[in-house]
Length: 452
Image (cartoon, rainbow, N blue to C red; front, side, top):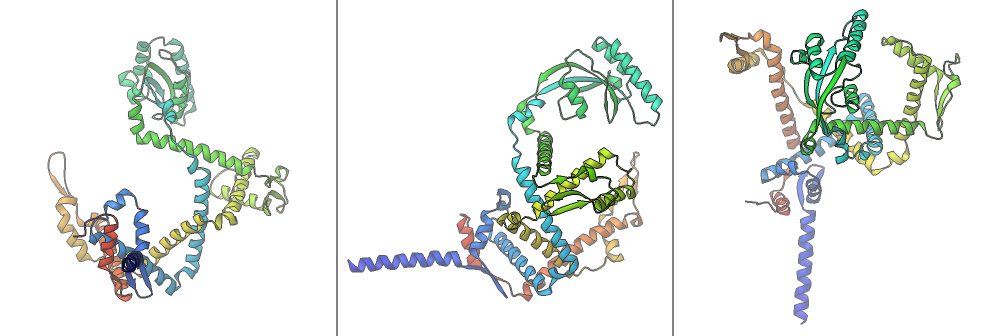
């Protein structure tokens, strides 16, 4: 009995040893660092389906581990060279931190609140058979615009039927649809100007609209009939989804803007707007302030950029914008945000990504493009890229002088890839990077992939 118990005990120990060994096995080693299997497994577990599709063979895993190792090695080089301490880099890293703080706040207050549901498509479920008459307004001739308006007013009182409308469109409309009696087609909301959408919402079939104005000009509309849209087709329409999403995003951003201005500690002292005293406080919030000097500077900047001096009402709106920005900046610098794991993780990833690319750009050795390389590229691609035929079938070949810049860019792109590859190879050699085949096979087995 004792022998059985001892055997069981040793089996348990052996199982624990194998499990621990599997968890702690080194996948890669380089001078000054190691990469463990658990670290790679965590990264793989966070991948999407498309990324996993590119991780199927041992070679795929080798390249993936090498990429992770190279990222760590480059960051070691960043530390060794003191790149992050250079003034221009420090300024960029500060900007990244601020952008990250804003992105998190924007996500919390706007993006996380956006949900697209079936009812959001209800406004788009009606299809209108639409006709229109257009008088263009893209002219400096105010007299012509006024005449066009009077013409449309006259027509709106005279048109009684679709036939009347089509005849008037053929005669008076300044749009490409005039040849077809002003027929636009079967449309739904979100395709034409928002002013047209607003009018269609309340326009009964067989009735003429009032005059509406869009970027294209002055319009009269006629809806001949309506029908229900195919909802399944609407759900598949990516542009429509994006339009609904953008509208919801704008709505939530406006709500967020309003909440920033409703902060209890925020005070806007409107009586001081326009004061001759530059030190006069116009906005205060939690120890921060905006003085008349800053507002005057904002006005001067507008003038320098060719904008007119804002009116009193416009200035009040701009001061509100400055006040909202003041509150936002305070929230971007709050300990609650800066000490959160969400911020720390995102800002580290963003800064690391920037520093790695900056190191690569500064250390890759890029040779200039030579005349011989330009000519060689031209000769190899002259038929495929630089030979054209005119309408009579005659061949025309662009001379190398006309396409030199294009060729130089193409050749430079190839040199760029080679320069990056050579830098990576030098770093692999310099840091003696070694990747364990056995560990790669263990990673593959975790996903149930064939290892032979």
